[in-house]
Image (cartoon, rainbow, N blue to C red; front, side, top):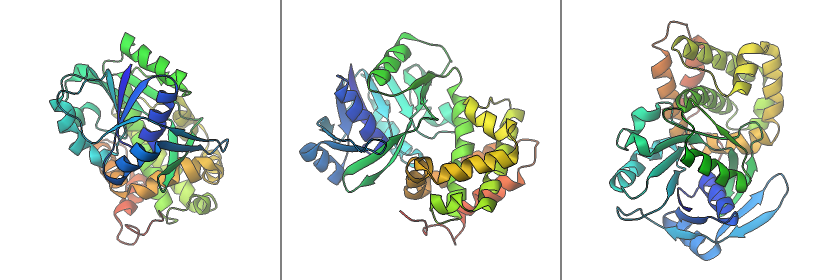
Length: 318
């Protein structure tokens, strides 16, 4: 299988390296200094759980031509970068499968320029940070690599990709309703990012700030209930369990602890801190959708408004 990974940040780098090591023919699209570094040094990864460092050589390109041919392109960019990526992908009709692995609460509405039969929706199971040109990452045990067809069917190409990811060491879940999954995750990640903003991006400090974590839990609960009113299923199950079924005090304690572990310090905070524009865009999408619902969402609205606060904007630690 020939795979193009479009995006050379933490997510793209980890998937590209591990798929290459698993025996697949991987090309990564990168630009500027990142492209130069990848060409000369390869993809340098450090697994935060084990401390193991690896260097993987992959092919590098700096643009996607209309005539380039791959079996699949894995799009791993931020949501605010997606608009600049879509024209190149839309102009290329040689690639039959495009797997979008990013925040996208609007789902197919944001991907209208791509033929729907080419699209797979997904989300990664990796978090981490770039330190210079090196990537320090963690596999998120609570969140598997999740993907699905737009129509919910389990197709041969979906199973083939799942096999590839598993061979590369990723746990995989196939979803029959990825658009609901992405809407659920958008509420969750927007609230987490806003809560982190209250402590200037310091996840350990947030873990010790019960008031902010309780506000986050209450906001996510409001958002999930509003999604349900709109007919959206809450997925994955672990988010539904902790935010809708568990008592508020338990959910708050759980997340206070989580923010003080690598879930917070490596899987969540680095991306939230480095992607202010994306998180604000995700929050605006969430509010635009949920404010059409009948349930009141005062805590959610208040929390997400913090992402646009002049006091917080631009002051978050990187």
